[in-house]
Length: 96
Image 1 (tube, rainbow, N blue to C red):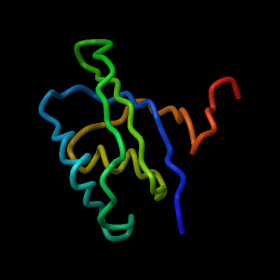
Image 2: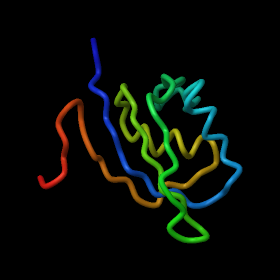
Image 3: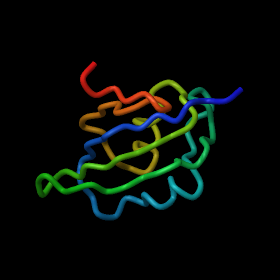
C-alpha cells in the first residue's frame, strides 16, 4: 500500500534547538496508540523566522497517520501553531 506524499507549510513555536535533523533521518517515535515509529520525513526545510518566537517550515511526509505532523513536532518538543496542507501527490491545493 503506497501513500501519496503530502506537503505542508507549518508554523512552529520557536526554539533553535529542536532536533529537526532527527525527523529527517529517523522519523519520530510516537506513542503506541498513535502508531509508534514514523518513517523519516521526505523533506524538511526551514523557510523563515517570521517573528522572534516562530519558525516557518515546509515538511513533506509519505505516510499519513492521523495528526502525524503535529505529533512528530510535539515528539521533539515543538508546538505547531499553524499547519497548512500545500499539496497531496502531484495535486497542488492552492486556490481550492
